[in-house]
Length: 497
Image (cartoon, rainbow, N blue to C red):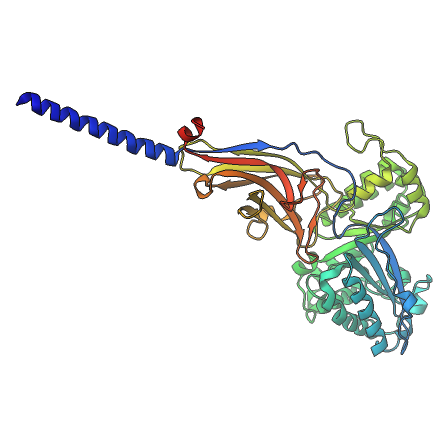
């Protein structure tokens, strides 16, 4: 009897052990998951690639006359230069001299709309400048009464607002020779502030504004802050204005004062003080241009625009755009000057090519990582590192996504998105800085298989992919592949295969 009990107990214990082992094995097989990263080497590449809203621009000038349509030969545009460089920016100048004492008529408004419509069909964004003079006679050409300038601002804004998506920035407040805010009756602090605030109030909040010099910028801001009661009728706050107001410089690198742009440098008593004033203004622009565009044209072949000096100052000012047509002597010098950096990928290229590739924002993927221990219920933790090696930031909305994708593209898990994560917003990736973006995911949420860790930038307006300066773009994935992550479930199963 006792023997039978012992035998029964033994059988029960054996069954329990077998059952427990089976349950344990089942738990082990269903909960043992690995997530293994195989990194792809990220190689930085040269070349402009597909970067929107930055680079060299072409100038298009339109003289508007009452009851006169623009001739068809004035409606041309150039998409690329003879070397195959694809323009992504154009500066449009509209001369309103014929309307100095009257409203814009239907012909003028139709001409402006036609030009903007033509450019809306291209990949280019536009820089817009309205003016009354392009002969260096600003005072003689501009309206005698500021009311006409404000009326023209209101009329043109109604057109600009319809094409806000393609406007990179505007330049000036309509006055002065070439609208460069010199040689004008309207350059006192109250006049400039009144004109700028009026233009800001009637234009869409997404449209950037720009004045000619840092001193004018500071004068306007100080006038507005000190005498807010004078400007209560304008529908824009100080904070809103700061987010929209930048600079343009058409005397760039032309002298120690950038041809009078920093006028105090011209009258300083010593070379040391001149340079100190210049460097202070470069620093001012560098801070400002982290939020708003800065660009223009280089002039006057001189030591300040020699290769190394030019690159240093363009980077310090965060320049995103330059005129390719002016100054030809400086641009020719850059094309003939060899860039020297034995540790860099541009060693032996021309200074012109280096500057071309670094105008605007230029993002490079550097590295990635992943940490995960099998049998843990916590998420896998990863990161990617990227760097903005360009001269400037991005200023218009660009979508960034980091995702896991199957090669077919049918399976995708979004890890990071600029729609929901502010750190993933490309407009926050400052020039000259590296950024590490962290991500996480649960391996239990994924099916077994190999997933590609893919980064992508897209322009939501143009609906096109923006390039990273890397060689890892995959057409099938429509993004840049940093590596693969393999998800495996059940260790024994895979050990026996």
